[in-house]
Image 1 (tube, helix red, strand yellow):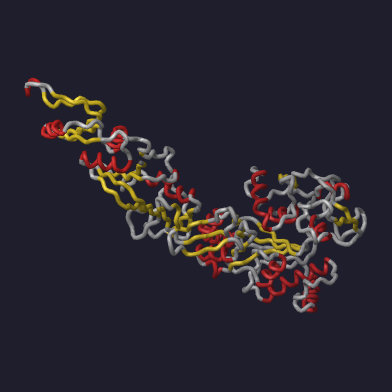
Image 2 (cartoon, one colour):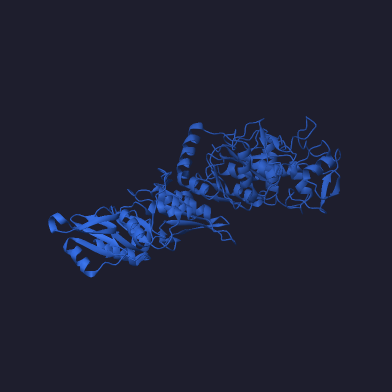
Length: 588
C-alpha cells in the first residue's frame, strides 16, 4: 500500500487524461492563463500517476499534497506609501473590514520583496473591495473585524512554518529567528509543531499581517495519508535513533530539527505538501537551508522536483546518505550556504600564551564576516572506553569560541557534571619584593616561615656568654635553620652561624621576580628549575584532546609541584590548569 487514496474515480480519469495531454504535466508551470481548478487537477495528476505506476519505488505515505484556493481577478487600485505608514494600517484604510490573503498582495506587487519593509513613495496595488469576486472566499470574516495585530487564531491544519512564511510574509532566511521569537511569546504551547486548533497564538506585532489562512480547495483529487500505527512507531523510533547525533549538533549551530508533527511546504501559492516529520525529519539551518532527511526513500523524484521549483533552499538526503549520524551531518552541512564541515587534521589553537591546543576529530566552520568571529563547533568521536572531557576543560573550550559536541556510538553525550562553583585561586606573587616575596613563596610551598624571630647562637649557661640575632625571616627544616636577612651580616658571624647549623640567605629589600625566587629556593634546598612544560587531557592515553604548554619555574616539594609563570592565564582556563596531577599554577 502506498498510503494514497483517491476519493473520486471520475475525477482521477479526468486528471489522467489532462496529464497525458500535457505530456505528463511537464508543461504545468507555463505562465499562460489557466483557471485555478485546471492548475490543481494537473498538479495532482503529476504526483498521482507516477505513484500509481510504481508504488514500491515511491512510497509517499509520509507526504501529502493539499490544494488551496487563491484569490484572483477583479479590479485594483494603487496606493502611494506615506511616511510612517505600515501595511496593516494601509490595509485597514483601503479595505475596511474585508480581509485579504497576504499571498494575493504579493502576487499583485511582485516588485516588493518584503511587504513588512515598505518605504515612502512606493506604489502598492490593492484589489477593490466588493468587486471581482475571486474563485472562492479569501478568508473567513464572520466577526467583521480584524484580530489584534499581536494575535492569530489557529485554524485546523495550520503549521508554524506556514504561519511564518505566509501570514508573516517572511523569507525562509528570516523564518528561524521568527520561530524563536514566537516560541518565547507562547511559553504555554509545549510543541509549536502541534498547534491546537482554536487557540490564540501571540505574534510579534511588527510582523503581524491581518490575514487568516485560505480554506483548502474541496476537491476529491487529493492524496491522503493512511498509516500503520505500529509501523509508523517503528520508523519514528529508527529516525530518532539516527537523530541522536544530528539533533544536538544542529541545535549548537542555532538550527532546528523537527521530528514530530507535520511540516507544510507551500507550492506556487495554490498547493502545499504536508510532511510527516516522524518519518521524514526536517532540519532548518539559520542560513535558510532546509534539509529533509528521507530515511526511508519515501519521496519520489517528481515530488522533489515540485518542491525545488518553488523553494530553491530545500534539499533532500536519501537513506544511502544517512547511513550514520556523521554521514548525515556531512550531507546537511554540504548543502548549507554558510557552513562547511572538515576533518580536523591539525589541532585548533585557543590561546598563544600559554599555548593551549584542542584536538577535535571534525570541525563545523561558519563563514567569516567582518568584525564577527566565525562559528566553530568541534566534534569529538570518542573511542571505546575513552572518557569525556572534564567539565572545566569543556567550559574553557566553549568560552574560547568553540562549541563542543562529544559523540559515542552515533549519539551525542550530554554534559556529565558541572564546573565547580568555587573557582580555584591562583597563587599571585606579583608586586611583592624582598622578605615579603620570600615569605609568601615559602608559605605557598607548604613551609612555615616566621617573621622577626630571635635566633640564639650562644648562651651563657653553655658557652659562658650570650649571642643571638633577630632574623627577618626564619625557616626550620628538620635539624637545620635558615635565616633570610636583608641586612648584611659580618662574614665571621655568618661562619659562626653555619657551624651552629644555621644558614644565612641574603635577600635584597628590592629583589623580586625570577632571580629572588631561584635564590631563595636553592638556598633552602627546594628543587627549582626553569623549562618548557606541558599538561594534557587525558593525562594518559594514545591521543590528547587538550594540551597546555608554557615556560615556567617549577618548584618541587614532597607533596606537589608548583609552576610559576610570568604571564596571565585566561580566567576560564584556570579551573582545568589548577590542581592537576602534574601540579598547580602560580603567577609572579
